[in-house]
Amino acid sequence: MDELRKLPKYNITATLQCAGNRRTAMSKMRTVKGVGWDIAALGNATWGGAKLSDVLEIVGIPKLSSNSSLGGRHVEFISVDKCKEEKGGPYKASIPLRQATNPEADVLLAYEMNGEVLNRDHGFPLRVIVPGVIGARSVKWLDRIDIIKDECQGFFMQKDYKMFPPSVDWDNIDWSTRKSQMDFPVQCAICSLEDDNLINQGKITVAGYAVSGGGRGIERVDISVDGGKKWIEAGRYQKDMPYFADDDLGSEKWAWVLFKAVVDAPENGEIIAKAVDTAANVQPENVDVIWNLRGILNTSWHRVRVQKASYVAKSNL
Image (tube, rainbow, N blue to C red; front, side, top):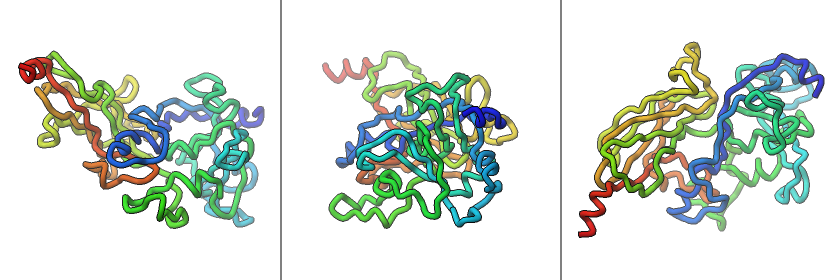
C-alpha cells in the first residue's frame, strides 16, 4: 500500500452498476433468477488511486500491450472475500490485458472514495475500479493480481453474467456459448416518481439518471407523457455543471448524467424516459426482446404510471 501511494494518484468519477439493475421489471414478464433489484442497483463516486497501467509497467508490461512476454492476455483480480459459488474459494474476475494497460481506460487500484479512505463495505484497503464495465468486474478487498493466458475461469466469469436470448432457459443453457459480459449498455431511469403515482398538481418534475458503458457519453434523454407518441428532450447535468458530450468540454465519460424535465401531468397515463448515447445506441422499447434467464441488463424504456387525483375521483363516481 505504501508503494502504491507513492505512484501518481488519479481521481476518476465513475458509475458502478450491477448487471442486475432493474431486474424486477424483467421478472414481471417471466421469472428470472437473481436479487430483485429495482432502479437503484448503481452508484456514482469519485475514486482515487493508482492506475493499473502504471503498476503493470513497473513489473515489465508496457502500456497498450495485448500480450505479456510470457503470453499473458488477461489480468485476473482475486479477492480476500470467499464465496459459496467458488466452493469456498475467493471471488475473482478478469479483464483483457489490452484494457488494463491502456491509460485512457482509467482502470484504478483505488484506496479512496469521494476524497476519503475507502471504507470496509466498499473494499478497504484496496479495490479495482473498471469504469464503464458491469460492477462484477470491479473486485473489492483485493488480494492478488495475476497475469494469465486465458480469461478467468471463476464462477462469475464463466457461469454467470452472460447475455442469453429469450429462447434460452435453465433446461437448455450452455454457458460456454456466450462471452462474459463487460461493458454495460445505455441505461436511464426516472427517480422522481414511483410507479402508480397519485398527483395533484398540473406540472410534474421528471428527473433521474442516465449512463452508458465503455466511455460513451449520453447524447440526450427523451421524455414522453403520452406513452411514447410524442417526446421532449430533458435537460442534463453532472454535479453543478452543464453536461457536454465532448470530453474537452468537461464531460466525465465514466459518470452518470442527471436529467430533469418539467412536464404537464397526464390525467391517467404513462411517463417514459429513454436515453441515447454518443454512439447513437438507444434503449430498446420493450423488455420482452431482451428478457434473459438471469435478468441482467434490463435497459428497456423506463416507464411509470401516473394519475391525477381529480381523475381518480371522477372514475369513482
